[in-house]
Each structure stands twice: as structure tokens, then as C-alpha cells.
Amino acid sequence: MLSAELFDTALLYILLLAAVALGWTLGYRYAQQGKKVNYPDWIPSVDYLLAESNDAALEKLIKIDQMDDESIDLLLKLGKSLRDKGELDRAMHLHQKLFARADLERSALYAIQFELACDYSAAGLLDRAERILRELLAAKGRNSDRAATLLIELLEEEGEWSNILELYKDKKLPTTAPLNRRVSHAVCELAERALKKSDFLEVQQLCKQALKIDSACARAYVVQGDLAFGQNEYREAVRCYLKAAEIDESSVVSVVERMTEAFSISGDKEGLKTHLHDQWARTGYVPALMASMGVVVTQGTPEEAVSKILDELRLRPSNQGFLALAELVVTQRQQLDKSQLLQLYDILRGIVAVEPKFVCSNCGFKAKEPHWRCPSCKDWASIRPFVPSPAQKKPDI
Image (tube, rainbow, N blue to C red; front, side, top):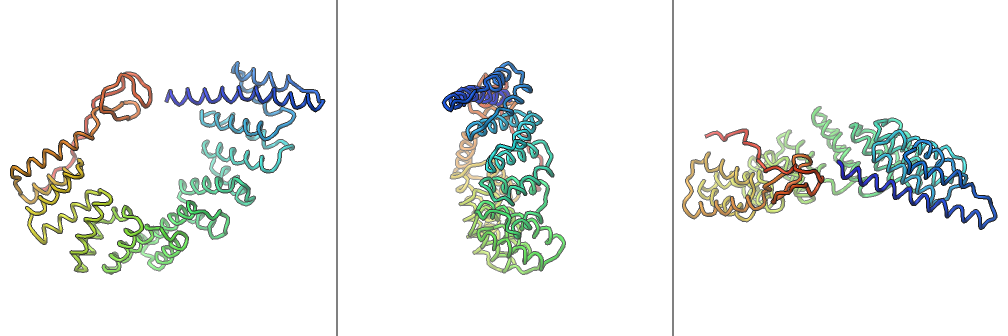
């Protein structure tokens, strides 16, 4: 977008002005030491950059006689700015030339290698990026945490879950909670693959391994619950799902239907109703509310279910909740009395109050007031009235 390009251009010029100041500083230092300063090798390069003679200027910047930490940091920021602007070839050229210098300390070379790996990753040269990142991990320098994170991200994109686990087993990854969490999810991916292949023993072993890596991995308990459910061990499935919910209530939203069935078959309908109500209260997940209303219908009456869902939605209005209420009313052939219609009016008013009235056709920014210029992407005349998508499916009557 235009604003991002302007920001990147401004950042580049700021860096270049800083380069000018750094050049004069270096010159002053050399003068103080009684050395001759090679101004033409430094100052013209900045002039060339400002005049957009960029390729020649980059060469001169890279070939300055001596570099300290400040100048290296400046050039790395310049390379990152080029990469962010999409000028990947020039960013790679800058970092490759810097890395080829023989006068840099090892810590500086590690920093340059990491930026080069970022260049390769952005350019889609994933094999090259992975090779450099593995070298940085083996070196165990100060960039090892960032290298490990980027390497895992690349392996996740390629679905190489086994390679992530191997890195962990070989103790090549730094021991940090965020990395352990990512590794545990990679192990869960392997467990879900094993579950699809009906390799139940492998599923159990992988889930245990995921929990050993990260004891707060709720997903591992969800997979164990799915395994138990598929083997008709419904009480065990309920135990696993509830254990996952203790760690992270949102982790079980994808298995509400299976959890409801497991609770029902095991005969614990009161426990099911309590859990579903708690899940709705903590997450606002409408299917959990509807499942709990289904229990109310079977244990009580449709009228009671309609009354309860009206009370809940009045406190937490939503389009999805209103649609669920409408389906309940239609499928159970209920009629709303005057007080319930007034409650319904309050629900609709709450929904309308938070719903955007306008949206930017360029970036999707949502607003309650019209704007000639989008506050987000700064595009002109792009704000349009917000029109919700039409419903695709009607409930069966």
C-alpha cells in the first residue's frame, strides 16, 4: 500500500542521512589517530544513493576501508529496508558482500548470516535459508533464538513436522517456552496423521511426547480424546476433553459435537450442561450455547430453552447467536410472547450498535462513520456502505 511504501522510503533516507553522519564520525576518528581519511570512498557513495545511483553507491558502502559495530548495524538496517521494500536481489547482494569481508568479527558475521537467511526466505529460496539457519543453530551464537524461530517457521510452512521433532531430539534448539510450544504442536500434527492412519499406539506415544515437551499443550489432550472417542471409550474421551479445557477453554471448541455425544452416551447430562454453559460463558462460542440448549430441550421444554437463550443473548448479542435463536424457534415451532419480542428487540439493537456501517473496498477497514479518505490505507473515495453477505442455508422445518 502507498502508506507502507512512503514509510519505507522515509526510513531508507533516514538511514542514509545517518550514514552521512557516520562517515564524518569515522573521518574524525581517523584524523584524531593521524591517519589519512579516504573521504571519496565514503561520501560519494551516500551522494550516489541520494541521487538514486543505488547500485554504484551500494558497492562503495560495502567497500569502505574499516567498519565498526555502528557501521555494520547501519548497513544491516539498510539491507533490511531493501528487503522490506521488495528489493531482494540488492538486499542479498549487500549481505553477501558483507559476509565475504575478512575483517569482521564472528558475532558480526552471524548477524549478517541471519539477515541473508531472511533474504533467502523472502525470495522463496528455502533450502538456502534452512542451510544457513542450521549453521547458526550449530554455532549457538546470540542469534540462535531468532534462527531457531525462523527455521521452525520455514519447516511449518513446508509441513516438515518430523524435522522439527528431530531438531528438538538432537538438542539443537534453544530451550525456551515459545519454541517448546511450537515443537509440541508439530508433534500433535504427527499424532493427528497417525490417528488418520489408525496407528493408535503411535498416537498415544506422540501425545505423551508433546506433553513432555510442553505440559500446557491442550491440543495433545484433544487428540487423546479423539482417539478414545473413535474407540468408543466415551468416559475417557470426556476426561481428556475436560483436561484440555482446564488448560485452554478455547481448545475444545472444535470438538463440541463429539464432546456432547461422549457426555450423553456416558450418561452425564448434568455434567455436559454445566460444561457447555461454562464454555459459552468463557469463550462466547455460540455452538456451545446451542448444544447446552439442546440438553435443556431434552430435559425440559422448548419454551425453557428459548427463554434461556434470550437471556444469554441479551447479555452477549451476536449475529451468530441471533441466527441460532431463530433456528431454535423455527425447528421447535415456538411463538414469542410480547416480553420475549422486546428482549429480541434489545438483542438486535445491541448487534446493530457494534456492527460496522461502512467498509473500505481497498483494505477492508471497518468504520461507523463515512470517510472520504480511509483512515487505514489512506486511499480516497474507497469507503462503501457495509453490506453483510446473504445467508446460504435455511434451517429444516
